Image (cartoon, rainbow, N blue to C red; front, side):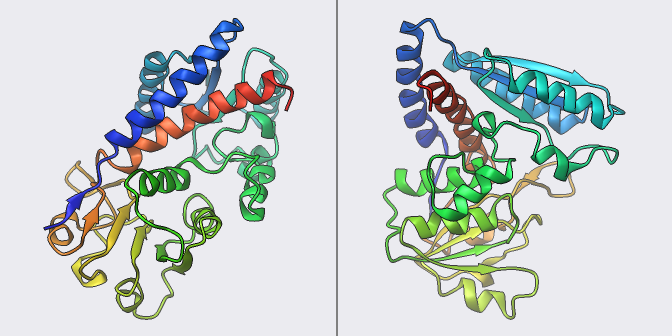
Length: 285
């Protein structure tokens, strides 16, 4: 029988560290402040916003929301970024994505101040990830995977890790973070021949395909650690990961659940980045 790698213990450990650092900032009369930029009223954006607000309140982080019309122009958005990049009372900025078609996503990536880019949208921070430079902000989901594996004392040095998925949001940056931990990394994607043969030989498999229950038990072997970062609608309105959890759980050594797993940790990583950005700005880094 497999072991469930729950996200809650990881979150609790991270929160203790965050609270201690916030207490130090509080002694200097400084409150870490996050700005959320939401364009329109997408239901999943609003859900995530509420989750972030709740967690900010729990930790003692101030959170502000700038709501913009769904038909906002690039010029208006540029103005918002200019204002907030130069706002000394805002330490971290995040804009919900995807964005409406009239907005140039590539241009927006270059608008945000890298020092406040807590979600690793800026090419400057992404470049640091690929250089192995830890001074920037890595994407939150890949960093959440690393935190989970470390929390459960799963060895990475010398481990064979397969990352299924090659997006710039998860797959590629995660591969770089794993290499920094001296793991041996293979990336699989839609054109990989006989993917089950590749994933079945790894010590650790990270599923970042973006398709509900895509990876069934044939992709895995006994003794493996499986980390599922997928958050998908299974067609019935329920959340499902990229791995068919029920069929795989009994086969592998340990696996993260679709809910209460990596997604739970990701939000905490985001808020950790807010505190880190606040510390950097306060210390003049």
